[in-house]
Amino acid sequence: MNTECGEKDTFEAVVTHPDYRVAYHEFAQRPLSDSCWSLHAGPDGRIYAACCIEHTGGESASVVRYREADDSLEYLFDLDRVTGDLRDSGRATQCKIHYSFAPDPERGWLYCATHLSGPPKGERTYNPVGSWHDAARAFRGAYLVTYDTAGDQVLDAVLMIPREGCRCLCFDPVRRRLYAVTYPRDHFVWYDLERGELHDLGRLGSVNTQCLFSDDRGRICTCIDSGRMVRYDPDADRIEDLRWVYPHEPCQTAWHGVLYDAVREPASGAVYMVPWKSRPHLARFWPHDGAEGRLEDLGALTETGDPRRPRGVNLDHVGGLVFGRDGKLHYVRAEWRADGAAPPRTRGMLCRMDTGTLEHEPLCTVQGGAGRNHYVARAAADRAGNLYMGKIMAKPAGFYRIAVRGARANGPNEPAPRWWG
Image 1 (cartoon, rainbow, N blue to C red):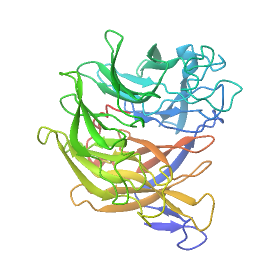
Image 2 (tube, rainbow, N blue to C red):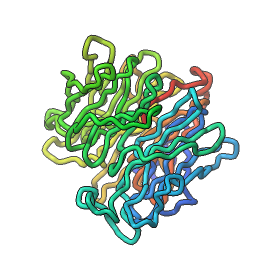
Image 3 (tube, rainbow, N blue to C red):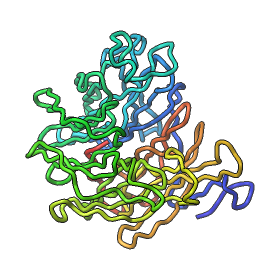
Image 4 (cartoon, rainbow, N blue to C red):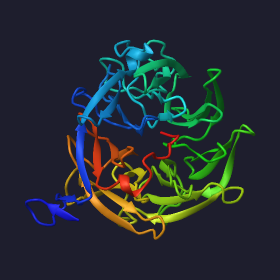
């Protein structure tokens, strides 16, 4: 690891690694874009990203695909046009896909579900609760769009969740179901793809989890806002509380211990998780170890600092969990220096962890484009083992492509499908 900067060993230095080469791809054709929440490897092995516009009224999200042949972006479709819920309708817009891509390898399809927050045209903000009964302005609902990655066409767009957005999505290829959490009511729902029916299991809490994940039996797990881990049993069609509470620092309570990101280790089947919570801890869950699985606390991932001082969840952030071809867990952690600056100086550091020794290694900074670089959302790997990570807090937004030297030789060419967004 080395630094390339005019000043030596400063916080602003670009940290590089000989095996990891970072490039940034900006959504230049969508200059009003401000986030890339969802990023996923499709069933064709190519990388799909959600180009979101949530802070400008009367705009629409787009689905973008990376084209390796010429290192460019393809703007596949706009969500308002394929759903028919047009951006200038006067309603809250189809502004984003929020952790809601899911691949269907058997059919070669990619599912994506929409989310809310973008205000109507000419307005600056949108309150979904305050506008719930406003027939002219209220969000129509989360649409489910099915994209055929082989035929390069949208096959269907249906209203899946009326009046609410889809916060996160998970696909069950055996039962042909999609699981989701709604916003703002925070309901756990599942959608029958064959019948086109929505089933509502009721409210989870007040703060949405950002991630659902599944085990080998098709059970769906997450953590709710109390920090408690819950699991949906599709055979019993009910949600059960597990004994586990998401680990946290001694200066904190379990509150807001909802999941932010989770990824399954291909070799062991263990699921590695981070929360949407300041002072985030890495946890490892063994879903089939006993009746309720087994949860391990693997410790803090960022600098814990003075426990008497508050820490912002959007500053003290970890995201972009993905396994590399070397079998190691990769992620991006936020690092910052206050130094009297407002806002603090920030950067994102790509790290990897050996899941056997639990040793962490900082690799390089992720950088590029407008805005700050400390907040990475989701990550994915292509068939060659290169890594891709969505960027937040930028206008235009975009994603990082991290070329990994020798990645293909270190493992299988085909990564295991990630069923959740």
